[in-house]
Length: 72
Image 1 (cartoon, rainbow, N blue to C red):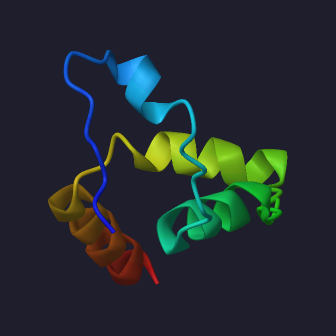
Image 2 (image 1 turned 180 degrees about the vertical axis):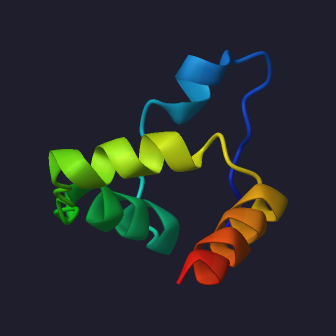
């Protein structure tokens, strides 16, 4: 069977009878979007601690730890 391909059609004209089937990528993206994300609750104290920890470098934390051990 030969098909006659029309020339000079716009993109919309070429795609007007096209039926898109569900593909794997779209299915997975829809499932991820619909999946419920777990809600992580932090106490106000933990949030405050995390905020202050952002300002400490690893070196400073190590120094503080050593000083606290010396105090013991």
